[in-house]
Image (cartoon, rainbow, N blue to C red; front, side, top):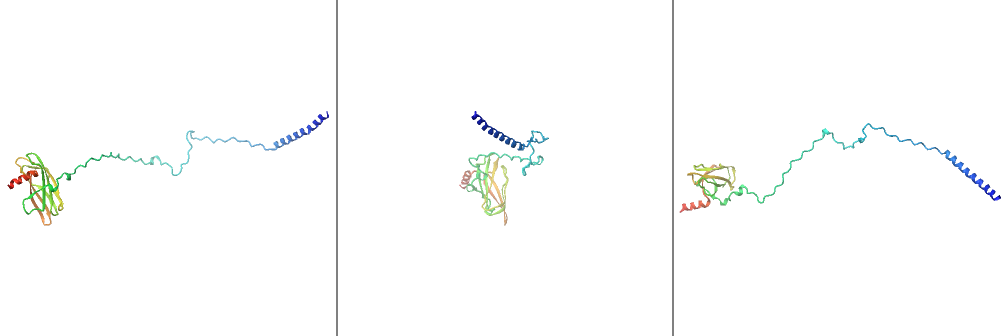
Length: 229
């Protein structure tokens, strides 16, 4: 009995100490300030614009787009370039390339010893048959410079010539001035051409007549050899 009483007496101060500690804790809790009430978040006022439209933003300087009425029209596309052409295998011959060489042409004989200082050369592509056109190549080569050089075929019955006279305003020495004619002989037309060559020089106007046979070079040489016999 004595031990039990002693244990009870020891437990009484411990219980009293716990009650005292609990009272101190309650007093401390009562003195702590109450937390501030949390206000509900304010919602922004509803906008008049529809909810689907994004909010307007301030334009960045330098990026403003011009008004629709002041926009310049887009440049029209340029013309489509033609497709490249393939180079030809060989260059086409020019008019000068189709003319005979000056050295291969015959020299026309003047009708007088004193004549215009111009050498007249010719070449006939074939013989002038009745009603058959033949091509005659002429080349007037002045020995001195002059002006108003003119090479003209004199009209003769039975001869038809396709081209008119050759006219050069300023002629240089040793320069060939070419002309190509188509001559048709009909009826009792002559077998030669009469060519008048005129040129103006410092001493005055000079002229001379030349004879051009209407035959190829081979035929003309045969006729000349027969005449010499």
